[in-house]
Image (cartoon, rainbow, N blue to C red):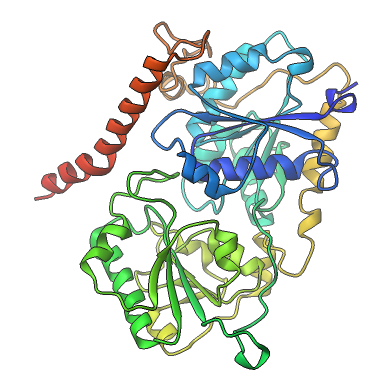
Amino acid sequence: MPASATKALRVAVLADSDTRWKWGALTATRISPGAPENTDIHLDGYLLRGRATPTARQLREVGVTADSLREVTAVEFLRAMGDATGEESYDVLVLALVGGGVQAMLHGLGRVWEDRADRPVLVTGYVGVVYEKLADGLLLRHGADLVLANSRQDADRFRDVYEGVGADASAVTEVALPFLGGAAYAGEPDGDNGDDRPYTVVFAAQPSVPDNRRDRTYLLERLIRHARRHPEREVLLKLRSKPGEHTTHIEELPYQKLVQRADPPPNFRLVYGHMGEVLDRTDLLVTISSTAALESLHRRIPTVVLSDLGVREALGNHHFVGSGCLASWDQLDESHRPVPDPEWVARQGVAADGGYETAFDEARGRITELLGRPGGLPPLAPYYTPVTAPGYLPGILARHHLGPDGTPLPGAPAADKAPGPVRQVVRRAARGAYRHGVQRVAPVIRRMGEL
């Protein structure tokens, strides 16, 4: 009898950034058998220590709560999973990590669970739009029981990649982005109906797109120009993180610094906070290629994907070819509003016309089936092994202090006890120094190298 039939469903999420924690935790609650009605879920969160480990502020902004939440190294996490047996065992484990992290955990967990048939159902996937490194990222995730695809389009592409290399594609499971929701757009503010808020334009910034000062300065200047051109509007620059914080991607040129050299009008301001709350007051969402565009489309908010810097793979806005949402600031300044293509929207898992609540039914059904599988679950079997990728896999595992067979390397961070006060202080100092080096020193060195 599966554990979930005799006790509250126990779910663990391992994440390496604020956005992946948000995706992982929300996914865990949506794919759990019995959801969304069943709320009897015990959720433990594990944050993988590294460059993008979220701060307390970032965790609060995500707005997802867990029964427990702690920071771990890869080896510490593997030890915790090995110790989680009996009543403490997990039913479902969600790996919300970059591809290399997923691959390392697949091999590490395979070693930890090699003698266990009652292991958790292992789930992984992507935070948002998949527009680069498709084959690389997918093959690094192969071996999980479920590889979630956020749309029909992604599910088709994922299966093509797996089948194209002769890998089992049965784990690919179509779902939708777990953080879609909120009230549908009610239309522009109308003072006659007592709605006297200003028309609000929101630019959803991205940490690494575009990746150079010239283009980021251009976007900021156009946003400020739009605010000056329309003083009756509220123009918001929605930021993901504050200086010194890291998200899934490195932000070397924060807009907060660039705006210090500008002279924005009073109706322009920077905002943080939960994206859903910002969308509650948005009349026009503008972005380069942020997943926020899909959140906005789901709520039927007028949405624009900018073409000013070209439609290019490097920007990710090529993903929106065929969406009907591409436009430039010149067009927006003249009050142009793109109309999204219904067929394109339907293939993206946006479900603007209903069906979102059933988008996770297939995943729930598969997990229920796996939890009840006679004899337990088979051993994990990733596509990459020391035989199929002898020149690639060892390096990926070594970055997480694991050997080619998935066991911890000599000298790996201790996993048998919690860090003491001194060790915690040293860790915080080291992480701060590392982030300073990545965000402050490295960009200067790169610019000097370009001279």
